[in-house]
Length: 201
Image (cartoon, rainbow, N blue to C red; front, side, top):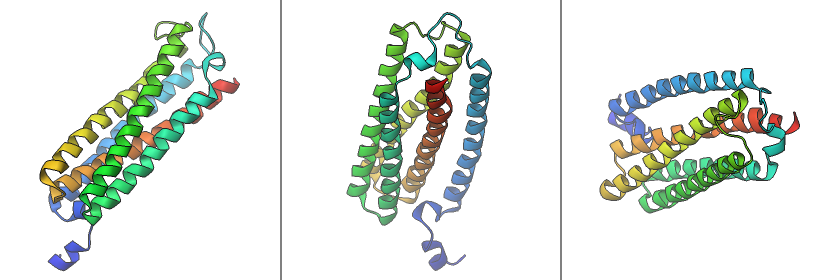
């Protein structure tokens, strides 16, 4: 491949190392998909087994869950804009959009912590029943992934501020963008398969 052809590619793909790292991360996401698939299957098996604990329809509230969904989907958009700005080499604009993504992610996490605490005060905890155990493990695993993603975003902000946008930082930025979009997709399944169904059953 000529140098001119290579330069037509996005910055994160312009080195062989960058290309291989991105392919490797897609493989990692496939493994993550298997993990969440197992958790969803467990949740489906345990659905309805609330024992003496509250049923999900009594605790799930559409308002809070919808706000959480809007926040996380908006963060996916802002993350996409940040990657686009990174490709343009606009450091300040990129960092602005990534900070907005970080704030939205923190807001989502705050709502989730509030939600879990609310459920616990109403008698729904990890130990309450098989259903609530599977719910907290599924939603909690997603929350842990969001927390990890927030830490990752923070480190990339620091690194970009120190080094600027290079072939190395651009690769990392693109990969964290893939990770963040993946978490949004998983949340859509949680919102639909857990919350919406739980509200009506």
